[in-house]
Image (tube, rainbow, N blue to C red; front, top):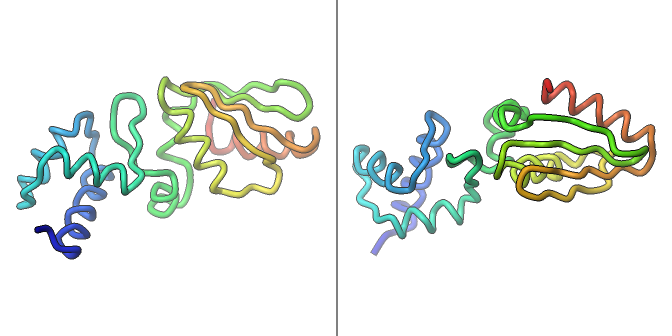
Length: 150
């Protein structure tokens, strides 16, 4: 039986591994954890990834947006997934991302709780960001262009 201390230690190791490199498959993560002395199965890793909120974007595992923000202080890690910013009327902004990354970027925007954002809606590679008016949209666009140089 795995104790809470072992689980916390293993999850900490998962976070370190994901911060330090690109992991594309759970089996790779199992192998890396075993190298550091953690006896794990793929099913336990799957549960850990789910419980930690780890996302898969552009074919690799990435830390959840709140962890990225905590460790990096900004959206720098997510910027690599943003491809285009477009305006769609006075209160709607559209961000295009790499396939599979839109939800991760949208969650980070939602959790940032920017006052100009009324809400987000994301698909696989597109995010719609609603604002209350054109002034709020302009403020949002300035913020997004500073974060995501597209």
